Length: 103
Image 1 (tube, rainbow, N blue to C red):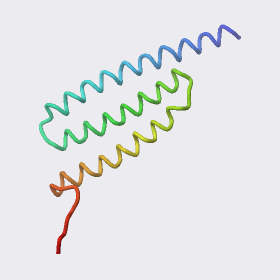
Image 2: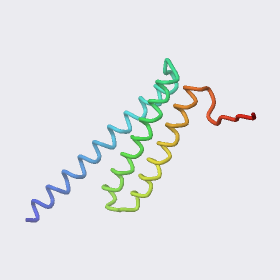
Image 3: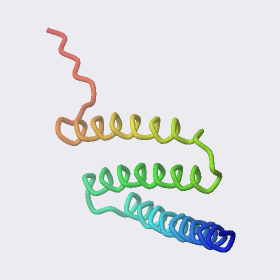
Image 4: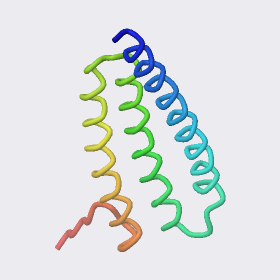
């Protein structure tokens, strides 16, 4: 039974480590897309994807550290990511974020 537990722990360790490395590489490539991106829409999509990558990193760290404290962080990043995506989409569509009609 201890051998199976050790195998499971080592499998979890290596899979989370590999996933963290993969997400870190994708975040670096997405930063390049934000800096060099050919259009503002590409930059917005890359920024949104970076937020999802950060949520994934927080989830993997919660698994790695065996803690549930990261769940609040994941939810907060998700909420801010949604609001930021709406603001960027409105800016790309209209050119302003807050409409000020002074009629």
